Image 1 (tube, one colour):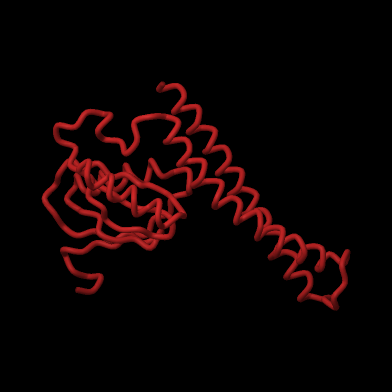
Image 2 (cartoon, one colour):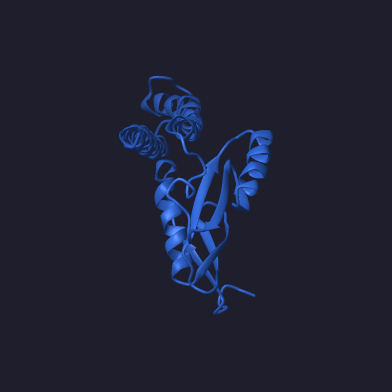
Length: 192
């Protein structure tokens, strides 16, 4: 099968947590252009050639296995095809032909949708903040000399720069996630 088959396409693509709607749209556009989504590891997407079709893709996020299993069964009963789960994301699709806008969504009410977005974003952001406090901040303190553990010289400067860059990346990622959450909240509230 290999990555060079004309019937298989692999694409490296990064979507932030709050950009799940963009990811859903991307998967739908790929299907409409003749590439059916079959797998992902979160960054590398695998597609197989198919007949172009208007298909709706939706992503549901839950860290609770029992919650995912119950909702997967419910979604199947409503016509959604379960594809796969990666980390806390579960992927579904459904042909869009003849569906109303309400039927193209997994959840019809804003409250449920915002609960899912809130859990999805803050679960990941919480982990990042924990790592920030546990790993990055102590190492910045260590390599600045505020807390001494025998790390002087060029190695200390290199590590200080590395951890400072990680801190900057974390802060940017966390602020993007929080801004995205409030953007989605505003969008969903305006559609009520």
